[in-house]
Amino acid sequence: MSEAKHPRPSRYELTQTQWERIEDLLPGKASDPGRTAADNRRFVNGVLWVLRSGARWSDLPTRYGAYKSVHKRFTRWAAKGIWERVLQSLIQERSNEYLLIDSSIVRAHAQAATAKGGQRTRLWGVAQEV
Image (cartoon, rainbow, N blue to C red):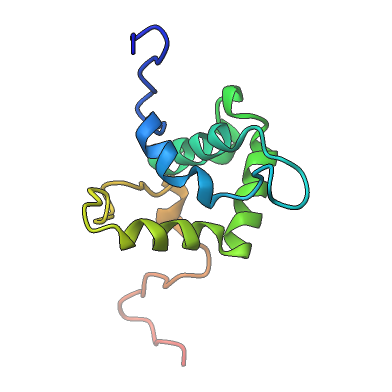
């Protein structure tokens, strides 16, 4: 296989081998009811781009599709348990090199440090409210 036919994926995208391991686990196959998903790989790569880069959905490069559509589909798949099913399937494989997932893989948004409604700083010398 020449490099021209199979260009190296970007840092956040699945390799051909990785894609082949999960593609049959995703909805939208020709044998599935409903629409056939011609862009599952592009969609998954877009989700990985957001999760691995720590960027906002609105910063998603247009090569992955409209960010609102990608986010909506990501949310639908989460609600239907599709991501969970994929991860459970990957966990079953003993030789899986991606079994360990830690905080170095997914970064939090900058806004995650300033959550609303969290504990506020207590002023010294002021009676605490009960």
